[in-house]
Image 1 (cartoon, rainbow, N blue to C red):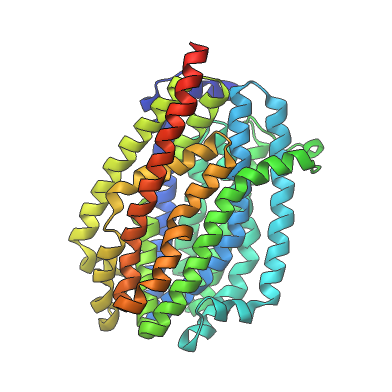
Image 2: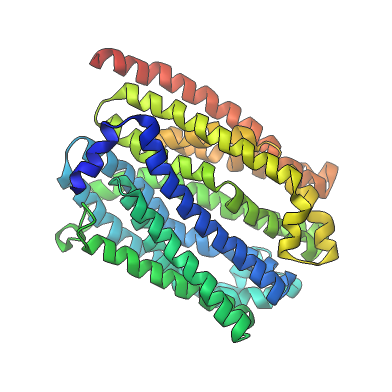
Length: 453
């Protein structure tokens, strides 16, 4: 039965598959994003606006380490999808076993380093002035839960690769709901402040880990945790790493972006500007959940059919995914342009933050309708195992355009230059991605379709 779920990726209509894969992914991302959103609202209203800025300092550090698991998960899952498409279950099991071992070794090592250099890391990421102490309290506790989060992020992508999006959705929903419950208990009821927020996050990461572990020992999974496949093989980890590095590089650039943004905004506007960015950042994670869901749903479909040499279906999946994601992105754009003040008031009643955030939000989301092409285009190359173009296109927006822009534009436009950098980088990266994706379709997919016809 589990094998049939994977085979469906190569036989059922693309639109039907994309909905089947994307809806659970979107719901899971929605719940996870709502968790971050509501968590920020709780922290802002029950602890204070400085607490929002403190979490924004810690988030890129902890999430980068956890993203090692996500990177290994996405890199390995690309191989797993193609292996299952080619009916090579042995290779899929070998990759999965190596994913587990690699995730545990790398994340544990990075967490140890992160705890040893905690003061230096917090300061580097913008934990200055009144932000430092609450950020340190939150950081020191949250880091202990990062290995659980990393393993869950790895497992989540494997679930989706074997055609089980519902369980991937559950793996995101369970810790998210748990975090909200823990937030209420630790922050509101027990009045534990920043420590309560941190323990809520760590506790929710642990229960998510338990669910993922259960799944891979249960009959729901095609790929079992088998001790005989846990021994690392250089050829396997090299293949996982070449594709997973794309995701890791993207998250590394995101973390570097936070480093620059927090420091630049602190210099230009102090704690208020850092808090405004934290709120906008939460909306970036939350509002685009349906677009990210379509991207996640697209990956196993494209990877499986490419492995099965069904190139017409791969091409159809690209166009369908871009169409669906673009429609959803446009809806998000309209809502955010219309209600930025209302959204900001959910997080805080601080008058200075309320004054600055709505305008920043409109700038940040100004080019949202076109981002579908950039996301799907970069994801496609990763899905079919072409690591170099996937890496370059993934880094295009934030690495090649956004970071240089936030270093240059504020010199001419002040804080406005920071916010202007978002839509400009979106437009430029979409143009570049569109060019390479169109060329790839013509030079690779069309030719392969002709040969197999």
